[in-house]
Image (cartoon, rainbow, N blue to C red; front, side, top):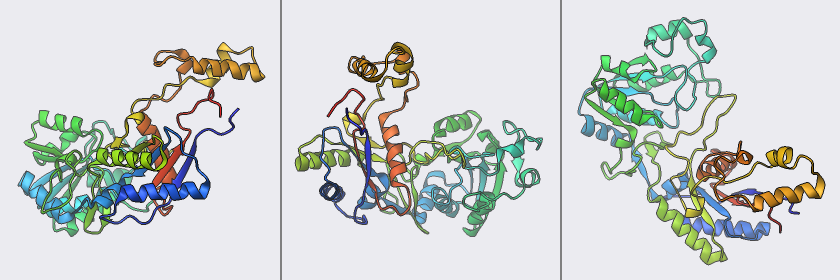
Length: 397
């Protein structure tokens, strides 16, 4: 019986620069790791590359001035409402700078006690005795401070309300901050609105238009085409962007399917195996301490080879052991469970023996695994190589 299942390895690469041939860099880095670690390749091994280096190699960058110019071109107003941005120095602060440079006044509507990905302005326990109803109450900054005070984020030490306010002012733009979980609250101040939420953006947009907004865009409607010769993303615009420098952002990568297909072809030529390839960004999981959901990208994976499409089709071993084969043990139990796995239906939907297995897209599961493996700091492993992910208990050798 095999004693090892899935094996996940972070692969170190050279520092990726704009213009690098990323397919060659990734292939050569994996082959070097294989020689060093005596890795043998198999069909359906998974090779995943972080979106950051894909965008970097392709030079998909834009400046805050590009954002400001796009804001002017698409809104053409002095006063703009921003609804439901996430509170992030890396993800949104630099985008906010560009927006503030493009208008004269911003009404900023922050959701409370947290943004959509779980970054908290304050501990939600403070709501209990505050007399504030987060479902209906619209607070001015003065009312917010009276109820919840000046709270610094426990991980970053930043008061994001003050941080965003001063950032906007530093761009020569007036700012009014409002706290509400109803996007319609912004319409009492301005009818021109940019929806800054990520996963709920279309619903927010529909609600605002229904309530009488004049012009409403979402973040994927900005930098969805080149501005001043900048980078862009035709599908996601500013969604998935993050800070590159004080005046420049890196956008979510383009031409992702072309990249993964080229990488799969290069690996097939090099090792003679069908290696599944994908690009991954933020994983989708919740931190129980910080309560952050993590997924600040529009999707976990913008592209993959066909073998990574779909969801797992797995039986729950503990269900089989506790129910169907409760009277068995040892080798007899092992063979009975393995036999059920070998004979399982191609689609286990509705089968009680599959209850509790994770009904998520494979790319979301694998992308989250990769994000946790590579991290976002100084590990130096923007490539993740996974073996045995699709193996099961019934497979030998």
